Amino acid sequence: DPIHRPWSEPPEAAEQQLQPAEHRAAGDSRGAAEAEPVWEIVSSQMAVALVEHTLRSTTGLIRNCVLSLKVGPGLDEDGARLRRGALAGGREQRAIYSIEALEDPVGRRWVRSMADAGEQQRVSASPPSEFAIFGADVVLAMADWGSAESDHIVMRNPMLIAAFTTMFDYAWDLAHPMPGARRDISQDRQLLVLLASGVKDEAIARYLGWGLRTVRRRVAKLIDRKSTCLNSSHANISY
Image (tube, rainbow, N blue to C red; front, side, top):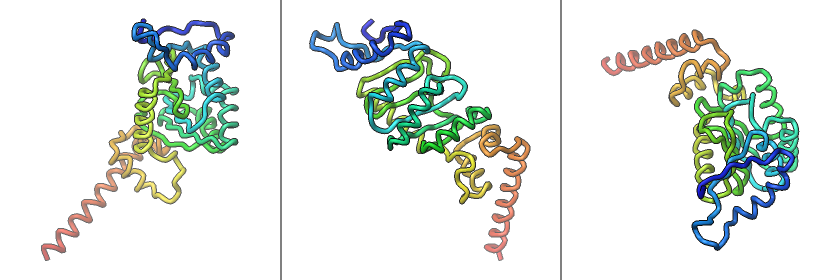
């Protein structure tokens, strides 16, 4: 298949297979018929070893988009320790977490541990998918878009890496600070920003740690306050 091929070697063969893959990604001169695949499919078992190898063999900013904190190759303790070590060594890392992923207490503790290590974090009601970008060298993404439980795809094609990087940076700009991270912004202000971003009431409740009824009551109060201000302004103009 000229587009992709499965990577089915057992986990213990990971280190032997990963290094040659880097050289193969450079391509050869034997013609388009024998061109290297655009991506390689990696099993979930192999993905853990791939993440650890890629952390060691690449440099530059790590961008991570997270749908779930219950499954994923970056959540094992060895991988997390390597990421924290990279942060301690000065390697910048940014992560976008889905609001749903923060509902689990274990997941929240894991996120706090990464924040304490220096990870820059934001949260989104609708992150694009689950993937990680290692500098300008490698993208590791889910084989099924929007899923956190499928096999993985590894990409070293510069154009695809640039596309994923642009997508992440756009999602980062649209994402919100982690809950509680901005003490200088009032809750009403946060509520207005979330409403203006099109975030649904249920997601707002999860983000702010409120009940759904509380969200709707606060929204109604804001509307009443705005209506009162508009009526007052109209009365002054008429007068």
